[in-house]
Image (tube, rainbow, N blue to C red):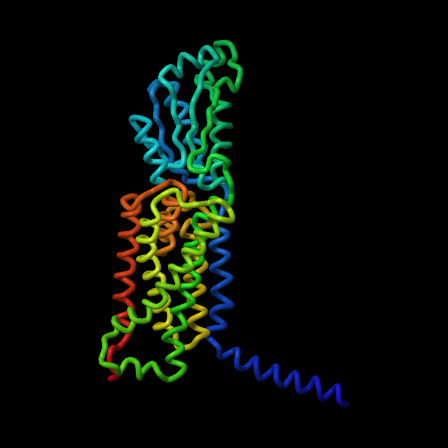
Length: 377
């Protein structure tokens, strides 16, 4: 009898909670939208297989044979149209700026050396992402090793050439030993700051709404932007403390110190922190409850990590997805971090990402200002 009553009470409470959950649109939306979002991201975007790889070619031979080698590499389907460069410095600059992941150097005597079985080519690869770099090198090496300079009809007339006569010289820049920790530690500060900034401000205004102090704050003789900026300033100091801690731990414990300017790192971090905090404020303005704020934050956090290039190089993402990732501030900050930490960049090298972050910050401030009423009606 007691056991029957016990389970009857449990089922009654469960029935009541089910009716409440049916009316919770936030929870239902999370249960439906979150799996769809993650399936699309992990099914369509994330892949360790190289594709859409930007590369450059320094073809000093400029012969039919060298052009056929470049064509065969592009025909694999892994690479974009190559960018021809005039000399080594231009090619190295493209690697340094992230505009190319590979530089193929074909020497002047390539065609004649190939006929003697003494041909060489050089591959300079961006080693910032060890896994992708190794795979790209493997695909290029296999294609070059199987290269046949003559068409099938011509090959039938002459002696068969032994495969693999091209000597491939590889060199990985920025991370010569292909250490995985360098790739992840270079951008870990951006991922941590994103989490902290989103969480710090996304619950701020919505908390005041739930506590009943939101209208009181709006009735103060100050503007909406003054309220927003005032809420952001205390968190900026926290963000810089976190940044200093991450850089110090990565350096002292793992030996990964920024190779570039610490001043540039401090400067570029400010617009990123402000932009990330403003996203949290926008979420807080749009949400009416804490549950809604958490739900919306998830939709910014997960795509930000994946589409920014922090987990997978954004150069390997398909077009459309790659451009969409540029709407997230972490995309531009991780570009700056990798340039400063791994490539020894200075302030001028991160000027374009800094401009993009400032633009995003301005647009977000405008959006927040449009959603907030500076006075009670």
